[in-house]
Image 1 (tube, one colour):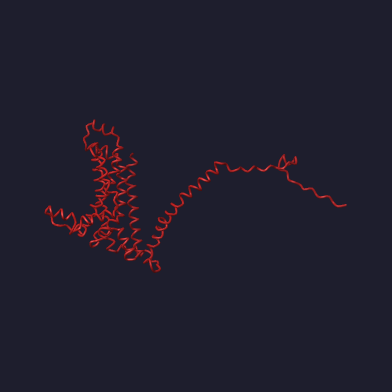
Image 2: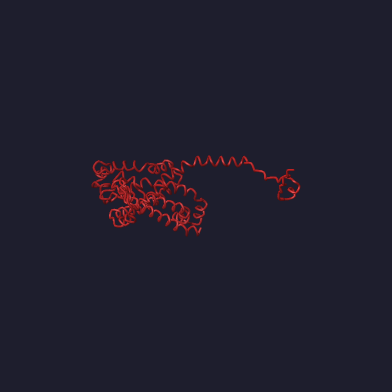
Length: 325
């Protein structure tokens, strides 16, 4: 007689198992409509953002990293590059042309930044009044800022032409001898500062106008009731109120002046005799005119380091004032 099958012993898992009942499995939580909606929104957001991310990576992060590597190489953009380490930076320290470019940039910055902020504040004070045609005056002050540096350069190249320009024609009628302007090594950089002041001061005016209109009129009236004159109101009420705006404008104008290139390229090409060669023009000249891309990249990173120092210095100077507030 064949043997009976052996019984299978199932380990006990609780009271339900002792009664011969199957242990229930935890139910699967279905995806809620809200979770599916969030997933769709996340996917749609990445679909919209991804082109901008790719552009930033392709035109920002990758070129910065590549130029950093390039600054340690000897590269003419044609033949294979070779690694030279710190030689490009050592050569910059001994290059008189780079030293001249640094000096021109520092002089341009020292003249342009405080003058643009001073003129911007004074014009904003004058235009922050209820006078006739004030909107027209504000527009006329801001229009030069809208013009591109290329258009400004072409315009002033015609006006300041030594032979046929309107400036020398006017000076001739006033009995003043003709001036070289952009062709005179002693005047060219100062003329560029003047052109940039004509165009860049409008930005400071607009920013200061917005700040002055936020100064509480009650503080001004209280100061005048206490016997404060115009100068005391300006010193103790207006200037402290616009201090954050001034710090922003100092940083903005510093960065703008250290990166000036378009106006120099259109008007003087770094001349005459290198008197208007600034750092950014020096970088362009080394990389795309002399075909020493590694050397140009090294000088560009010197400029980047200078900009970083400027930003850190401005933030450190602002910190004590913030602590007092």
